[in-house]
Image: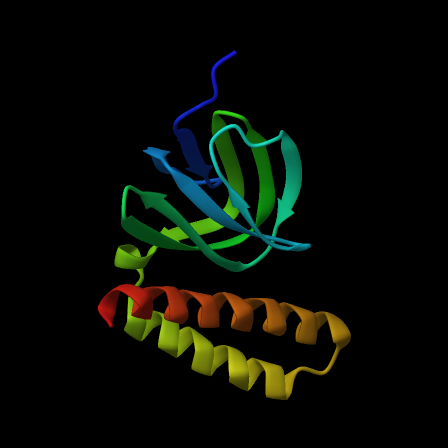
Length: 138
């Protein structure tokens, strides 16, 4: 059996297929921490957390903001089923900044644990989106 030279990366959300590319390496934000995947990786099933995902094609890196979901890693492929996923180029910085401000206000006004949890989740998404968008603009 020959070792894989590349990885087929697929990212899907409930509303669209976000990405299908042949890549050399992927770094994924799992709930147990970030983990890297190279060709011929051992099979893994993992849960996805809000964070930065990047993948490499040759020497070029591409960044996405992803949130909650599942990851299936096989020796020649990675499938990510995410609640949301946006490439750095797709992110509207002004909209993400406005979401951050709104969510910070919601957090201050939260009266229940459930409201606070929801606000923390939304704030983490907004901060991640801002950070990922800035990676390609700096």
